Length: 268
Image 1 (cartoon, one colour):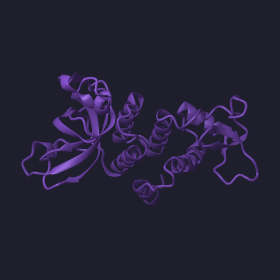
Image 2 (cartoon, rainbow, N blue to C red; image 1 turned 45 degrees about the vertical axis):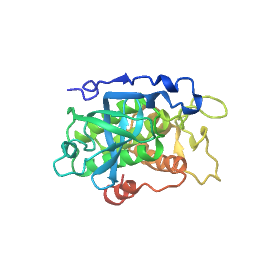
Image 3 (cartoon, one colour; image 1 turned 90 degrees about the vertical axis):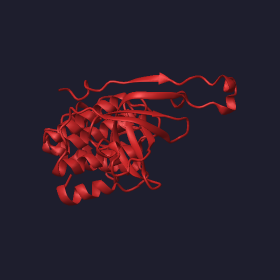
Image 4 (tube, rainbow, N blue to C red; image 1 turned 180 degrees about the horizontal axis):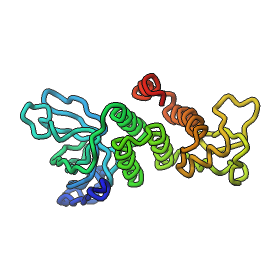
């Protein structure tokens, strides 16, 4: 079963409050004026809220990263306890106009194998990346499909190093902070496979110089990365250090806890 195809969604507009019509100072973004139902989503992260509830950060197909209050989710007999699991396709509903909305429904869909062992750690790394790099309420439909594909590949024991590099680059591209890796900044020409380049994180590739202290990669590596082809061992090695550099820049140097574990245990 195709995991992406198994997910479907719709939103249902909330009843208009006619008394507030025309009052611009009380306006909210359109997506917060809706009661959302049957929205495909994944739990990225959760933490306790008061005595019996949770705040969950979810990545939804049509609304992007959204924070929700799951009321009573910590109670021993709450049906939500077994549903709000990471890496499993869910259909969620929520309502509310504040920054943190209220979860109303949660249903497990299925269609993905569970992540185990090292694949589970890789999944947590993907989640940490999205929590730290995605703005809230910013939809990324293409990235949602990339995420489903990455989880599916990890669950089927595809090479983790390749899956992570592909997703890291997709994340930077989908959020608009990565330019084409195959075009030289100054000329717009395609990079040459046999030349060496460095990547300006804000602009893109330029030819390497002897004084460069940032990662230097071959044109072939950049062409391979742009094509999603990581079969070459040199491409795998150079892309690993390049993506660490680019992610660190866009995270303003903030550490990624799961990546350090991956480096220590799996050399990814």
